[in-house]
Image 1 (cartoon, rainbow, N blue to C red):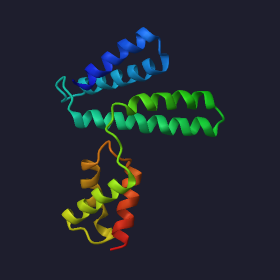
Image 2: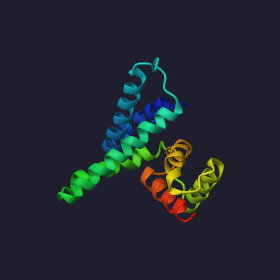
Image 3: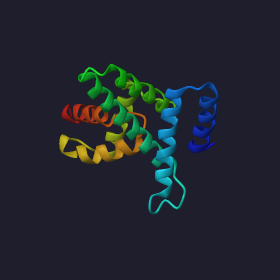
Length: 151
């Protein structure tokens, strides 16, 4: 079942139960799907990598917005953003624990032959591609820096 089909099925359920926060998040996902399908060169189809990319971007945007709303004392708006994050994350793969992430990054470093912090760009390119949707880029970056600095 494609992402679009999953979203449509959940939208029907959310409409039946009148679950407004879930419906709001699903509508935003559907809008991103339509936008991705109509992008030049997409040909009306989107692959899983593109889906992961925009879902991850949506979660990141909402986290940043929630943080700003909390700083401004708008907990009501921050709560809405957090509700949407929960719904969007249901469509993303389960995030890796820090321990699992460290193991994956160590294996990527070994495969790439990186030996110093100067090789960080090469490692980050491979790591972000392999770990897309499974970990935040900042966390990956920090772990890569830490491991390469200790070599």
